[in-house]
Length: 90
Image 1: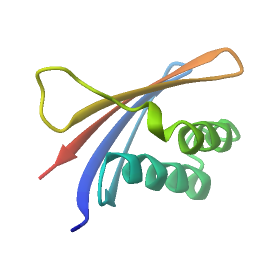
Image 2 (image 1 turned 90 degrees about the horizontal axis):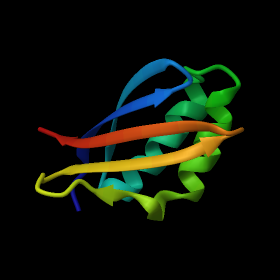
Image 3 (image 1 turned 180 degrees about the vertical axis):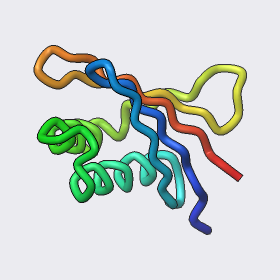
Image 4 (image 1 turned 135 degrees about the vertical axis):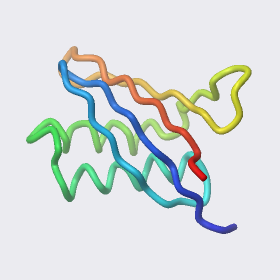
């Protein structure tokens, strides 16, 4: 399968973080995003915790009803909500 571009918008601890990755599908995009977090650490030390949570919970992506190519993923890091939206980009 050809790699597609995905845009990830993450709300965490009062900040908004945007990334783009290339992957074959949405689950692989979440894993690719977790690798970006590990490498670039946009949220400081919390980025590693979020990366681990995202990689471990890749099966918990939820397609947003009535929209094509849009998913939501949420998790918790030390009782703080991670809210992430992923959009398959052109």
